[in-house]
Length: 157
Image 1: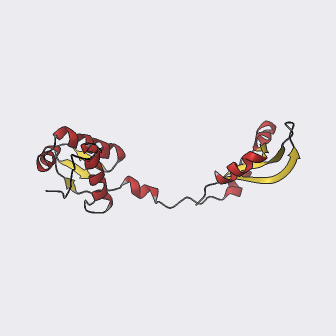
Image 2: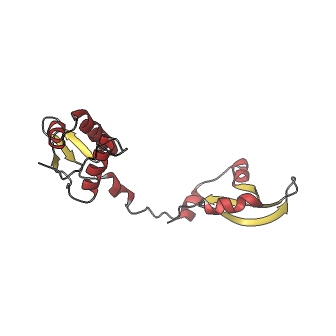
Image 3: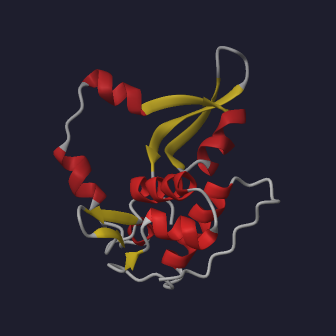
């Protein structure tokens, strides 16, 4: 099996990285299908005119990331479940009110959920996915305008 892979020895990108990226793209675009056997390291190295060590490095990286799997005595195959597929799985929708009502915090724990936020940090919290509830402003001991509220992390998207 010959794979249409081009390796450029004149580029600054190492050969094993070029091969890794070419194989990964072939897997992700469907040129290499799930459970499809790929050439042995020896065959591919001979076909591309590169060292077997270079091919082995690329295969090892793809194996460690979950794109390939090996079956002893049979060969190397494209994984049936690709790691990139897991990135697009459906999120779990949970009823947050049910979760909150089932957890009882101590007085100390309740105090930790209410924090004082200097005005300069408030925008940073909102941008980083934090939601501030029950916000009230006051003058901090440092003399700056601060806000007091309950902070909660939310998943955006």
